[in-house]
Length: 404
Image 1: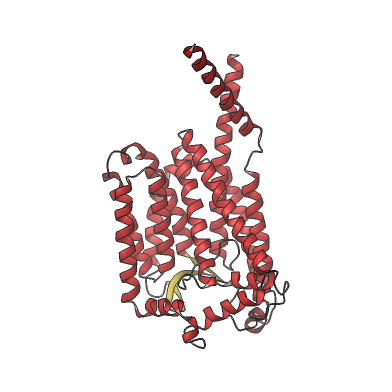
Image 2: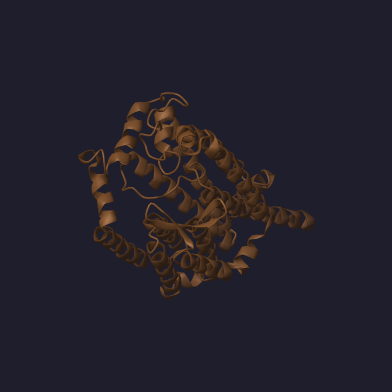
């Protein structure tokens, strides 16, 4: 009697599994929700960045749509790059990951050479090519995730038994972090650390090591912050921007005013007052404050939900890939999803005054070619992972039908 019940349960589990596989096979070639959320963020970002930059562009360049035109070209270039990356099998990126790591280190070293790196507001984060500034940290974020995904895929079983395989990526991160902090780019360092730790945690690394690394890194970041006059000022301003609203706390206080003016439904598209030279360069790091002012709490929540949906689909694709032992695709999806959502929410937190000010862009929305292009490439990598997963299911289904 028990054996019959077990057989029925086993048969039921097999049918459920086959049904789930058929549902995956019947879906579109790519994840529709991931594409819809990405396209919505790009289009909304183009509109809101334009709204935030019109007055500033007219004053500084004599052309109201100066930033719109450049961002539009960046968007088209990013979509073209994404289409190219989507066509390339993930195995190619896995094979060249050592070259990508070397590229990261070279770019980070070259940018520190006097006369090569472009310095803006005291930070040397860009290399200038003609009329375009390339932000190296945006390239590093994607390339390091690719390298780490390949390494973790290779050591996935060893990481569950020993902590030794985790030493190498930790040392590499320390080296990259040192170069980033030399620019200085504290925000990119924090995002890269959070991304790497998320990937290590999801790879099955021992929790004791994870907790130890988090504690050490947190203490190190805190010491770096309090030992730098520049960063310490940002921390104190974050705690009370109204103590110095016309100097150190000016940008944050103006951002909070924008949130207050927006209320639930906003003052209307294009009707922001804060973008009229009150909030400095509102089209870059503080564009979310303009979104909150013009579209209100409702519009801001929609943006947050779109980012959360991208992260959810990325983690879902990663989980499905891991179940099929496609570890490189899994860790790549995990890393990109976690990195993007962390950067987005840090930027939003900075705009809302709940986190210290950092020079981080809002993916797909803030003005900037490097951020736009690398964000598009990152999404293309996740879509490729999803495509290869669906293709594998289709091949398995064909084999099953052939046997029948």
